[in-house]
Length: 334
Image 1 (tube, rainbow, N blue to C red):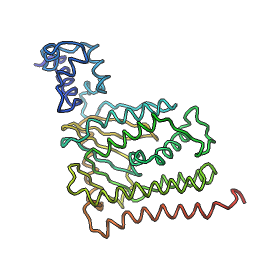
Image 2 (image 1 turned 120 degrees about the vertical axis):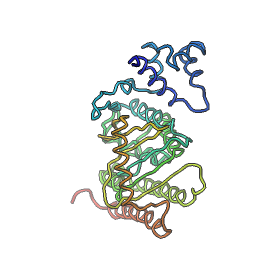
Image 3 (image 1 turned 180 degrees about the vertical axis):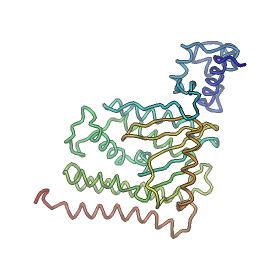
Image 4 (image 1 turned 90 degrees about the vertical axis):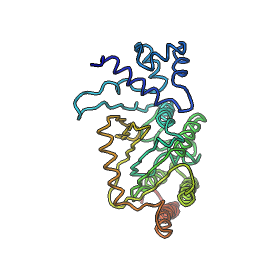
């Protein structure tokens, strides 16, 4: 019978290998990180010598590996859940963006990696490609989460985000665009962001000029996506977009990496659970794939249906812009 400690060590070695790009030597990386020679690192990676607790912790911190993942409960219906940290400050926001990047960077430009994303609203990653949308998204998040030291009554025009936050957001957005993706959008994917825009405009915290710029930025990003879905047929990256008219999806993501699955499920605005239990991930993946039977495949449909999908989104944005124009000169209270 295999020694339990050796079994855990082997599992840990596999996790480390999965976190290291294929063009790099896992043994060299471990040797460098632990400041040991190649032979010592080799013995640890092949299970001849077990990692010490200090070594395992150092490697886990560097490669963002949860030690809890090594100790699944034997009950097949029980599994370990990792939880993201709460966001209370500007520094927490930067940490959040860095965490998202660390979870996604291993999926970039790989044939053996992919993401299946069920999106109740437009995925936040599209907001990270445009400076106006980065600012607007951060403004909403800061307000709703009551982030300190931001004043809840601050006007959008006076709201400033740091260069580091913009850089982190851009990096996440660019990373997302290099991953093999299947996205399932709910029919009302734009509703949330447009309602937020109307809400803050009616509070007189977003001016008509800024509201228009946000709408133009949304249209710009959607047009970029529309063009990409038409012209990516020969791209090495796989991208599939579906529209779900029947079920209002929850935001949920299945990440596949070299046969290992992770299920990411948000339960508050920016807090999420990460589950690596294979059974739970497969069940969620099967559920999402089953939804595809009732969806319109936007990236592989007729020109008419493709145009109808995006025109519906443009119409909703233009309708909100018109509402804002009509309300602009009206008093807040009658």
